[in-house]
Amino acid sequence: MRIAICPGSFDPVTLGHLDIISRSAKLFDKVYVAVLKNSSKKPLFSVEKRIELLERCITDLPNVEVITFSGLLVDCAKENDAIAIVKGLRAVTDFEYEFQMALINKKLNREVETLFLNTNAKYMYLSSSIVKEVARNGGDISDFVHPAVIDDIKNAIDATDNR
Ligand code: PNS
Image (cartoon, rainbow, N blue to C red):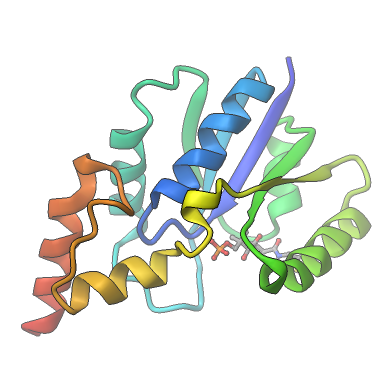
């Protein structure tokens, strides 16, 4: 069985993430979407909520499972018998950082390959930060995220604004 890992913060999951996850699900027998637990960034959603939102969006992908990880990604890959880390590349600006990560991960565990899927052109500009920025300013996020998570994002933004 060929297993891959799609890692990230997913704060929140976007259609760009879901595009990479669903394409990975076609290439591999099993895909673990691994949500980073101890991010230094100040998240909008708790890890538990990020998992819940992800799970709502992948109901049509039976070979995809959401897990969490802390520590090194390559250790998470090893624990789950994954042979590959799959990441989306949006633009040249992503490349340098992702290339560095891929090299470090290779150094840490040479058994695990990093695969880059080029983003769908539709999602070139998309990121979790942009979704939050648009939502925070009252914009329409329906072209950026799965319909099942729109209200949760709006509510979370409203709750932080009123704090
Ligand atoms: O969605 P993001 O925030 O771009 O995801 C980044 C993520 C989770 C893929 C990256 O931060 C990560 O792999 N963190 C785990 C720590 C690790 O293994 N780092 C690389 C070697 S130092």
